[in-house]
Length: 169
Image (cartoon, one colour):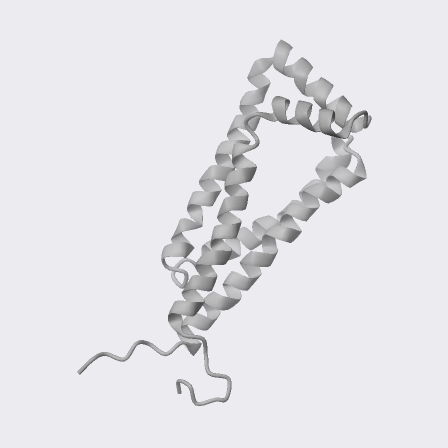
């Protein structure tokens, strides 16, 4: 029974606006992550310049510079990483358009966010990354899952708590 309890549900439009706002945050994050994976050498040079001598960042810069000069084809791997971020962002257009039918995309995104943790904890030490770098990588999953959890909660409210618009007679 719609509106029969003291805490009246949010109107359908308000829930949809909230879903789309949080999805926009998530999509923008994916797009920025993707776009910034293309110019890695320039970005790491800038980061090293901004931070000054740091040790590890300088080591990363030197590795990227040397690799791009001697083996430029290796950067093609990060091009695919960037492309994957952009394609994943496109997948979230489905929930933007029809959240109830596409809630599985949100849940898939949540699984991906959780999967970042074991990947970072395994691959970080194997690739000899400092632990603080691993924590930064893990934070992408932690921060990424927050808007998705909220969006999933809002989507779950749509079919059960929202009063459908009353048709004019």
